[in-house]
Amino acid sequence: MDNGNQTSKTGTLILIGGAEDKLQEKFILRTVYQFCGGSRARITILPSASISDESASEYKEIFTDFGVEKVEVVPLFNRKDANEPNLVKELESSTGIFLAGGDQSKMVKILQGTKAYHAILNCYQKNGGVIAGTSAGAAAVSNPMIASGPKGSIPRSGMAKIASGLGLSHYLLVDQHFHQRDRMGRLISGVLSYPHMLGIGIDEDTAAVVSSQDQLSVIGRGTVTIIDACQAQCLNPSTTPQGSPLAFSELIIHMLIAGDLFDLNRRTVISKEKSHENFRKSSLSRS
Amino acid sequence: MDNGNQTSKTGTLILIGGAEDKLQEKFILRTVYQFCGGSRARITILPSASISDESASEYKEIFTDFGVEKVEVVPLFNRKDANEPNLVKELESSTGIFLAGGDQSKMVKILQGTKAYHAILNCYQKNGGVIAGTSAGAAAVSNPMIASGPKGSIPRSGMAKIASGLGLSHYLLVDQHFHQRDRMGRLISGVLSYPHMLGIGIDEDTAAVVSSQDQLSVIGRGTVTIIDACQAQCLNPSTTPQGSPLAFSELIIHMLIAGDLFDLNRRTVISKEKSHENFRKSSLSRS
Image (tube, rainbow over all chains, first blue to last red; front, side, top):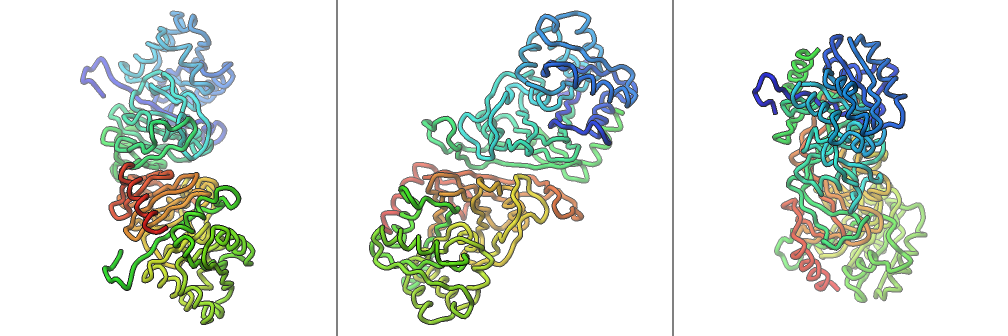
């Protein structure tokens, strides 16, 4: 993904499954802080998915406590503000942007095509910055994204409601609160419709860290489920009504825990020994 | 599986996920009746997994209503009775044996190694008979079998409690009430321990019909999930404590609905057109 031009460098995505620890060790948020540059980080918190900046203020306090040089909440709650030069400037000068949770469709509607949106893209695609998102903030990173859908372990026709997302990734279909909200069915239903994408189901207090080298590493308490429908075959007739179970073959599932590393291009796990080595190197180079 | 000797012929397994319809169309039980020979069937019902023969009497009434020539409940509730010549004779002369639900470990303890057990084996392995089991009766067919284990979609260390089963199959690890009781985690945990076996998770009012040609076809309202850990790699360290999430890669999942056919030797789905053709032939040849 790195295009070799020294003035342009792809950054890191930190996709958090929601409900990350904010009271004890704060391991996930501390990792975000480290990837953003530690004490030299300049972090902007975007509460656009939420109805208020309440939770964003909580994140600001936590990052401030970690010792971040500069952390700001940028209250973008409508498309007019998302073109406001002063607010956009904050995003442009960030080493990391944190997308708080709420409703992913609300955030995409506010940001899509605005100057703020392009500042986020630039931060990630050109300036080597970090885009971290929790819950709805993680779901919105992909394009298309899962906008909503009912819970349940059986995938059903039309279960995942798909919509346009921010498009920081076009090959990861992200779902969150994954096992806690019983979302295996909707994520499988999503990847069966978009088999070129990898389904990434992230548990609460868990994150998938996607490096510029397209390696995904897992941190936190829960699991990250990777669903690969590339070779899968749908068995249902074309007349299957909405809500009926989907039948399929050859779906590949990987379930990872903290310390595991996955090669997103080759769609395989990287061996544990190598994985720990790579993750340590990656953390050290950023903190 | 057919050994080519005309006097010895492997039969059919009908593995039912429990809670099959007993009031309306009774599609699953009607299929059991057809596979056992229709009006010429001689069906023996074994309630050994249960604490009484109450449900067995209900099955007897249903099969009688279908027009079965001979249907008997054989009340084997201890190992002494399981060696009783008169009761064993009933099993030996059956075209089909129906294992009612309850506790699979209870049934295995009563039957294992007795004359009744060998009569069941002979019915299936030599006389081309049908062994149908519902719920615990389906789980007990394999060896090893899943004896118990908690619900949950995340597979955890030690989640599936494995014990010796009847051993009519040594390569199918059967679980039942599958999606209804949220048993994906325990079945994955089971096949990760026994990767030479295929996990077969059967929903309620659904059955997997396993032919002597090692083809599995699905009937009924729900899904049959087939879990293939043959290529899977466990990622947990050997010190993983009991109850911790299991991490793994390259697990293959197939989810089938009524009409789908699966080749158990090649571990692949047989195409839909061929599947319908084969299933029709198979049904016609038996009813």
